[in-house]
Image (cartoon, rainbow, N blue to C red; front, side, top):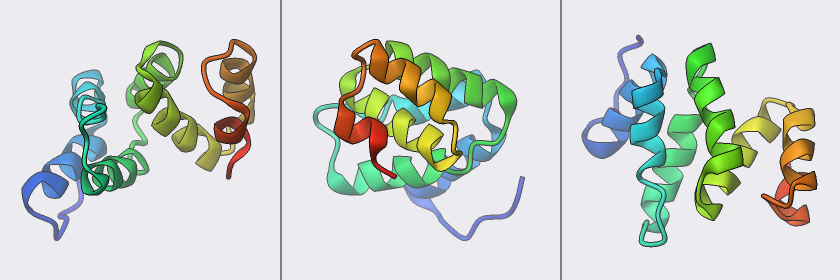
Amino acid sequence: MTENKFHGKLGELIERAESGNTEDVDFIIGHLTDKSSLAMTRYVDYALSLVKNEIGVLRLEYYLFNGTPIQRNYCCLFFNRRLDYNIVDRAFRLGLIDEIQAFSR
């Protein structure tokens, strides 16, 4: 893990993302609810961009297909940024994400 300069909730999310195990991704994704503040969604989005562990990526794939709408949207962003368009297309074809979300870069 790298030493990050952030503290508080963002620092905690970053540490979890860098570890990237199933329970870490669950913790991060758990912060995406219909009551999440704009700041929290930005923290989560940034933290998710740091997930590199294959186990964590597979967990994000799980949430893309099984999460709440907001969780699916942020997982879609994660996979779009990784250029994993096949997985995004599959979620789109299943009706789990809308066209705007699926094709936004």
